[in-house]
Length: 409
Ligand SMILES: Cc1ncc(COP(=O)(O)O)c(C=O)c1O
Image 1 (cartoon, rainbow, N blue to C red):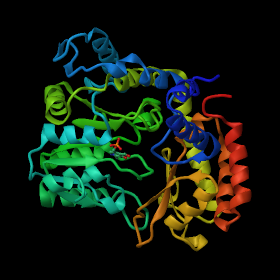
Image 2 (image 1 turned 90 degrees about the vertical axis):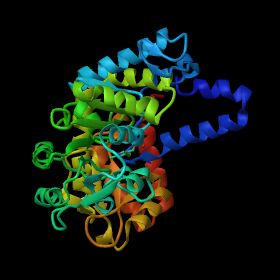
Image 3 (image 1 turned 45 degrees about the horizontal axis):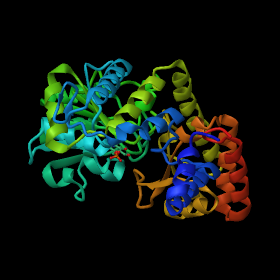
């Protein structure tokens, strides 16, 4: 019996209805292809920490300074997570309490900005996240966001435009980071522009932070005043966020997380983050991170051969954004047909035109052990799924997924 089925078996005796839901989700994950760029399979050790007795513990505050009693093991868990994060990313300070990537960004803004301040970030139509100024999000309501874009031809960040906008608007902070940019941001260029206009530089590295941990992407830590990240994407940890910064911002960040924007820390998640950081420090994770990128490049190349237009002409990361227009359809249509074939991905804004494209990533399939040969198989399955041979493709997708069970047999 594998570790992932045990809780379901225990639950079945107590709550068969919910056990059925969890078993359905387990089968869905194991029987289809998970290409959502923000998802991954955590290790069984991370799942064990998430399902540990620390889930019961209240621990408002920070190690050694809690509002609750009985925090000796909670303190150890958090100290371990903080120390591992600092070493892994070469940061002077780490706060591992943010409940999510959005909470990490909220804390960064709370630490550095006042409502009404101007912030320069990637515009949402080009891949900015909701927390980068969406009117539907606190960020757009409380701050005055100015959006930079990407070059319409190349899809690459236009640093001249970033500089021009920074000079014109004199933002209090510049945010670099995106939900769909498949290339490495030039952190040194952002730093120079921020310094020129006296702005803070906030790196929202939610996507690339796992590649940074594995040495497969440049680190924003030496350049940004504050780095926000998630722990659940390529990094392969539990769902959650973290903030990294220099010693000078440590106190402001800690106060911005608790008590300003959050209450009690989720200690089971923090323990699971510590487990993930420990795993990411091992040589096997370095190999993994480089394979994620090699797989993304192979998949992008194969999708191009099957007729997709690949934004920016390729990828340096786990992320691919692609336009299915040459195949006679838009992103939402492609996503629907692929979902019917068991290939799960997102749609995304494209830097040009009105049509949406598709966004996909290779973190989860690489965790399953797939390599470049499987990426070519996946691209062929895309082509078949989009032609509309749903049922036949669904069977082949299921066979491929079953060859690489995420948690072993
Ligand atoms: C760039 C960026 N920032 C922030 C977030 C928010 O993370 P979460 O969904 O954990 O709040 C994401 C999530 O995908 C992201 O890609």
